[in-house]
Image (cartoon, rainbow, N blue to C red):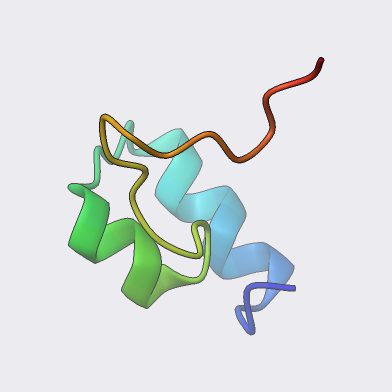
Length: 44
């Protein structure tokens, strides 16, 4: 899903790596950032 090797993700997680939203998008963890008016995922 991320396009990264499992060992790379494991090593990054062990290092306690923190990512900004743009970094997480580039890493493949996120599709984008929700804004104040974004209702995706809201149920009802």
